Length: 65
Image (tube, rainbow, N blue to C red; front, top):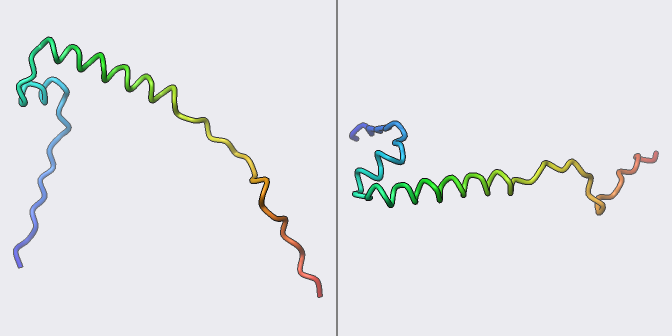
């Protein structure tokens, strides 16, 4: 059985990826604006953790002997 080889590459920047796939400078600027908007919207949308007990849970009864 041949050994498996895994290659890990560092995360590329938006500019590097755009250059690799042939995106124009104007489109790159538009992409950056869209990505910034998405990141901002995601930050606003994150719900705050609610630590609330469920209203439908039954209380545990003590074992009677």
